[in-house]
Length: 299
Image 1 (spheres, helix red, strand yellow):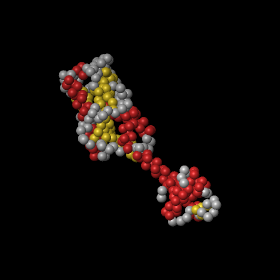
Image 2: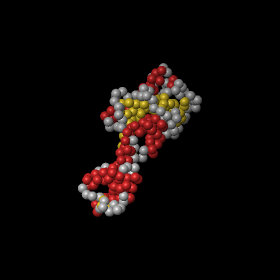
Image 3: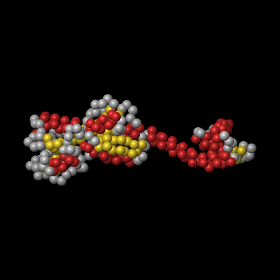
């Protein structure tokens, strides 16, 4: 049953006249009569007594009129849901994120996305880079946030931002009051670093920067991310490189000193190609606004 025929039926029932209803609907009276006849054929009964003036509803027509408003509301609700789904405004969005990106600007951007699309259920999975990319490739995640440049050809990525790093030291460290530090200033002390499998590109970036300064650091490996690193530094187990501009990475008795030359991690969003579903497209559009544009996937 076409919903427009129900709307035509209600118009005739309200006006009691085919000609007036046709004028209100911006159609000809014969065309309206034809549509009502087709509706009657679908139902298998007359809806109007056409011998009276004005036309009146039959018993079947009376019952249909009672339920037609509810039927139309139901159909319109389905149409709204279908439209919303096509725009990425409903459903579940499975997001993977490495621990290091739970700090900084990403959580606020995801929170804004939730406010913008309240009917999208966001399922957040905290995991390391390698399993995150595997889950994306297998279709068990829809979107991922990583620092690494993914290699699988079925994945696409865009850079979101650069996260500059600072040297984290115990507050009572002799170098804690320095205005800036080079990595070489810390060559004799252990470096607190998260496991390579957690974020291999980050670990490689840090170790390569140390090598460029002429030394290979003694590494103390944590089992977690930035928060664990800050805790290790507070306990005097070494120094670390933490985000320079993130207040959420905090531990008592730890200070951050600017680093020269600067080092930064690239924050990236990753998704399956070539046809991401509507919720992924909605998130990517939101991120493009929130981060003032996405790159072309080569960064």
